[in-house]
Length: 554
Image (cartoon, rainbow, N blue to C red):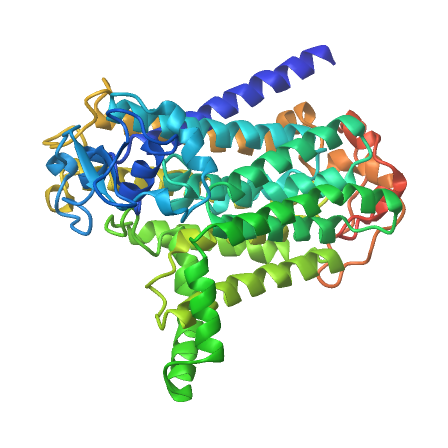
């Protein structure tokens, strides 16, 4: 037993390292200023602690702050021109005045204040440190939440992070952009809070509550739209865990507190005020005719799937100037839709209501903003703004199963993991090539004729790409082995249906499925893996509150 525990620890650390190296490649795949509005965000980071000599100094006018000119001009020479490499960036550290900082309180200050820790005289090194830190935080918090969730309920995080993060999610996770924390909160908050409200074990409850609060605070402290998603995730958690008990009501103080934090962030940040006000004015006092309003609404409704698909490769990366090959879009949309359809076979009222609310948010929120701005899909609202909602949506779709592998067979799982791994490598290669030479000089060999590369990174670009892509692939391969091989299922019970049967047999019948209930699970033979210790400690009332039907063959 002790040997198996150490094996689990070693495998977890190895998979975490592979995931970090995989994201680390994305941290090096683009230059300073490559993410959207990075001139604003980097200047805001440098000025997050107030005025500091040679870092952030007061300008000649109100709301003007002077920062190293490299931050202000970093992307302007190549943004919107995919044939221009990043070699045009003037590496000048002389101070330059700009109004594009957070001096006016447009964004919540927490993200900028934390990133300020990494600011040094070396701008390249500072930005790389920020990106690697955000990648490490994402991997670390995800592993911590998974470690505290009982086997059989880890699927939403595992599958959402597999099918919904390439290419846009991985680009922003390993960036110095506030969207990094928005993505993290979208993946983790609702799951951590749901399991915090469900479990009867004190230790995991404290841990999950703390991690959920931390991830929620990070999201609310990065972007005000992410703050609204944190509040939404807290509501989803209360729906998914609902039971009639005083204990549940008392525990709901935490998600209610996160709702208050999210609401405060939205109300005190200027980032979303323009969208809220403009949308309200467009509805109550429209400046154009009803016919034009209807035409705009119908046009945006029909084009809305294109906005969602933008997170899966339909839109360009960076300043929307870095191409993504069509194969990435096709494969990622394919695996996303396939997992969504598979997940709909297990529906209880909690899951159905939560999915309906999340889908409504994915439709109404972008339409509201676009209508207020008199804009069509493709303008004003970028796919990354709604990526946290998409993570919640696909996570909900893959919830309620008896096992973490969702009952998929090995061939189905192989195509999912293999496809995602190859598309990640392809998207990173295209992204690096765009900045190394520009797309007009692309030749496939990242080491040949490159015009830009990090002066602080000793490895050549092709090596970085290969090591990172291989590490990401090994991470996915490791997940496959744990979820779909007998040895992996014996090592981590709960990854397959057979491992969960003993625990389920002790539980009373759960809520009937609405449609497409899963086939009964046959009893395991004598060689089946023993149930996880944590699964055995679940109480019968909590097991009965599960979303999906759990039928055990006699």
